Length: 215
Ligand code: E4P
Image (cartoon, rainbow, N blue to C red):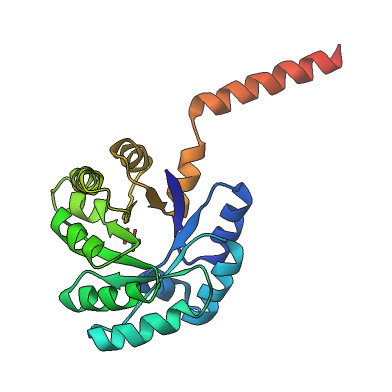
């Protein structure tokens, strides 16, 4: 499974790029607003830090305007993927721009039916929001499993991008469900490195090594 980082924070992306395990970046208007940088400047910078797909989201709601904006965003860098929301207007826009070769990440997916429509419109990625479904008492991971099964049944090439990840267990469950990608906030990526027994074990190795040096 590929790992994307779900942030627009340049310091976090810079550090994560040095790990060598991050395959792409997802942003959304809320994440861009949180950083207080110019949208285009932020995306340009991110595309130079991570060579993989970098999602930049349209902010128009009408299909014709989305198409114009998507074509503009796609020109910012070769690795820009245009994020388009799952609405009727978004599906119209995706059907048009995906035929031009623009890669679309269809966002705000909350059901397998929405993912089926997004795939038929030519989206390269679908982003089901696992955590937000869990928040309202539904099983977000079940939606990932349904989409993976449907896409496998019909050899659909659209990649399943597990989004709205809230804890490290979500990453494991996404991988077990067969998601192609999980997009993970920086804090949760950092949690993935850690295990108490790793820390305890390393402390013991270092103490034993230091003891031997003194002899
Ligand atoms: C990524 O593509 C999504 O925009 C993001 O994962 C949403 O996460 P949230 O539900 O924590 O805002």
